[in-house]
Length: 423
Image 1 (cartoon, rainbow, N blue to C red):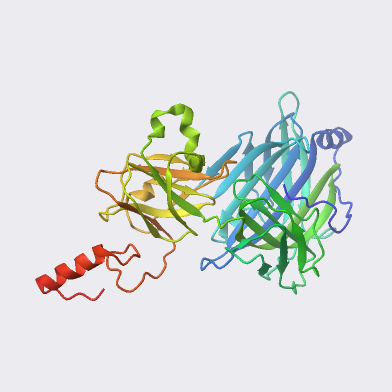
Image 2: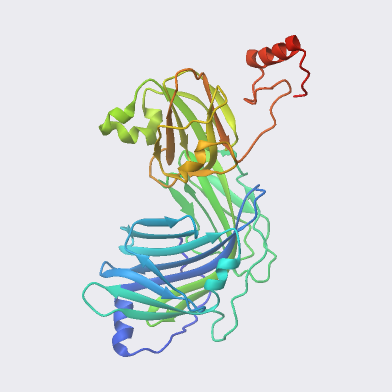
């Protein structure tokens, strides 16, 4: 959870309900966070993501959350640890945080298009809280400028981080720095980072002023990290029927770095042991570095080839990775059988067609997702085809980004047959 508390203003807004509802809602709901923003990825050619998030913190008596948007649409947050719908981009979560003794209910939609925002919008959000043994309660949260019907201003400046540099390895403690914020809509900044395996996190204790350009240094454990720099227009705490609420709009930039590494985004390991036949060792795939497998190499998300002849190869990731297919040294995409963990849209791996599977989700392990493939019997290398490509060296004609005897063999065969091809 990001600590948005103690940010700027005490606005003291409230909507009058009956005393019974007022007491009941605040007895079971401790906080509501409602935000809408535009999220960017550092050094990415892709466009931004448009994100809407609702978070409700409750005690253990709550069994479901519903909310109705100003546009008149109603959505449900079920008591399920994690759900994701790839067709709509909606994910919900329900998680207990022991340190705060709260259950966090979260609804988030992230889209490459702004159109879904039409289903949410500015205005009053009606949140309905359901209990196991009593009637539901309702809370009205104003997602607008306090005391008016005017919408919250949307920041437009894209945050630009200076330190740590994207995709570099740094020493701990880590200092964070960024270019100054000049957007008049911004009244607060949040900065922090989390290990991609969710085992460690650092960040400001509360939102800091928009004139700040640095924070830290902060002690970061060895591993790969994802950082966030967020420019907010935030308002709160708002008193909604005795419940503390925070609302805001933002722009955000995400970037990666590592400590004590480098730790590439993905690695390829290979070995002779079939851990699928040993159910007690199933989780070894998430911690393959603790096994008898050999590390063939790694990459920061780019298409790459890894050489070695083994019965089994395993692709493991430290952060989500888009994978087109896994090719053998014969140039064919692997078709199965599959052994995977945290793989979404796995059907996309069957062919090299720029249709991508997403590999990786938080697990608490060294690696957050894996794909294990079996050598058909004649492979001496595997190529991980992702959504990113690098320029291969001159002389590479087989597409594995190596200049070796295989390239010379192709050139020699073409020369002997009189074929003239420009590679």
